[in-house]
Each structure stands twice: as structure tokens, then as C-alpha cells.
Length: 101
Image (cartoon, rainbow, N blue to C red; front, side, top):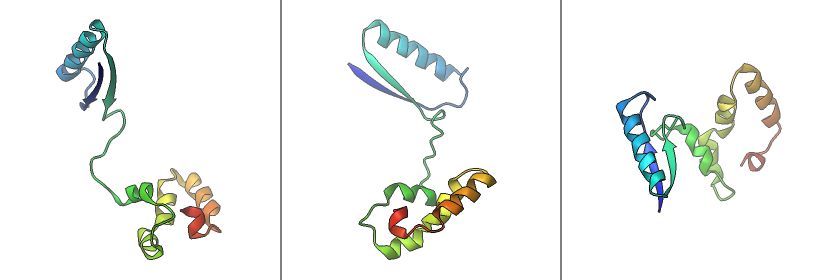
């Protein structure tokens, strides 16, 4: 059997983590395959934010909607520190909307 375990707890020394460890041990002993999805390690944020829209951009998006998204601004903001933002800004400066999409 293949098992996906979704785990979410900020403290790796918690009782919840101890339960996870025992559950995984039982799966191993029984010969099952498993994968652990640790939401805290993944830095999962359940709130859909403006920057998340960029993952849904493709060639079919209407141009006016693309303009409203301010994807250029999001790309620069997500680039990292000031130096990375500067180089990202320079890189996308002459790109067309289609190039960015």
C-alpha cells in the first residue's frame, strides 16, 4: 500500500511528531510505501495571495487581465534581496508581455 501522510506541526519535538514517527515505523514494519508531506517544511501558506496568480498565467490569458495582475511587479518583488531585484528588473525591462507570460 502507498500512503501519503500530511503532517503539520511547527515543533519537531512535539507529541504529534512522536505519533508520526510511530505511525511511520508501523508502515515500515508492514512493508508499506509512504511519503510525508510536512507543511511547515514546505512553508505552506493556505491563503491564496496576489503573487500566487503567476502560477496560472499562460498564453490564453486575456491581455487586460494580465495587465491587472501586475506580474512584472510580482516578479521583481519575489526575486529576493535588493541586488536580485535590481538584476531581475533589468532583465525583464525590455521583455514584452508575451515574453513574460
